[in-house]
Length: 72
Image 1 (cartoon, rainbow, N blue to C red):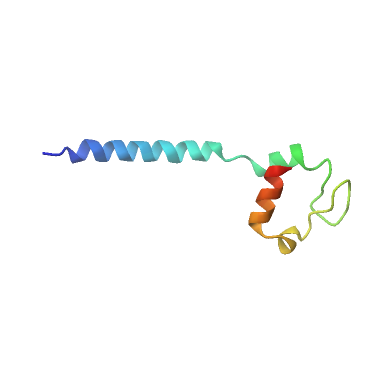
Image 2: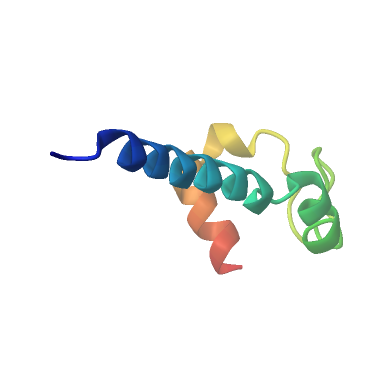
């Protein structure tokens, strides 16, 4: 006989723990932008050191932007 209920409970516990932890792992994008990007960029057309970021999602796709940001 296989004990289905204890295994099911363990799976649910692990899944719930994973979901809870992943919620805490999500960084606050505005905070990260302020700490790491605003010295060179603004959300607008104005160029500081780097270009303004207005319309950047129209010029580049999401995957390109992720790679660029992670490698900068």
